[in-house]
Length: 68
Image (cartoon, rainbow, N blue to C red):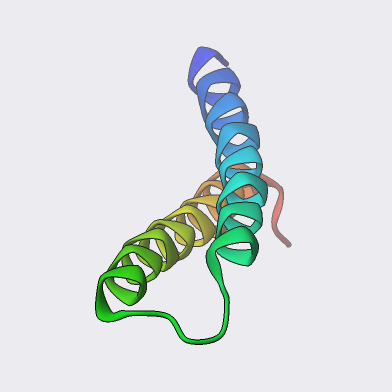
């Protein structure tokens, strides 16, 4: 039970992180970006991917016992 609570909180935090990271990406994305800007954007995008994987992974773990 406690593990499910922790996983649910982690799931929601990962979703909030996705929203924040996509907003940062949209704010930084502009024409004529330099190599430095692209490296920063790449790191943010990697964080976005990791958060998306976490959202899916935790959801699969939480729904496992209820899957048909």
